[in-house]
Every structure is written in C-alpha cells, then in structure tokens.
Image (cartoon, rainbow, N blue to C red; front, side, top):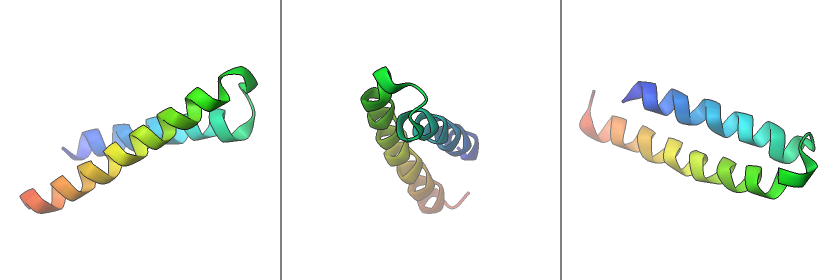
Length: 54
C-alpha cells in the first residue's frame, strides 16, 4: 500500500510541475486536474494505510 502512496505522490508532483510551472502551456489545465486527482488519491492512500495499521 505504501508503494501506491509514493506512486501517487510522484505523479501528483510531476503534474504540478507541468501544470503550475507553465512548461506545457497548452495542457496546463489538464495537468492541474491530474494533480488534484492524484493528490486526493494520495490522501486517501495515507488514510487507508493508517486505518489498516500496516
């Protein structure tokens, strides 16, 4: 489970770099949406990790 949390974090950070950094101006809105989706998945993963107690 912790592996998925790290994967979600990395994807969210990459999407943030593209979306908020202005590198891909044409796809900035899509990258911002992906950032928020994976940020939510990251938080859910962290919560599930602590709820399961592993």
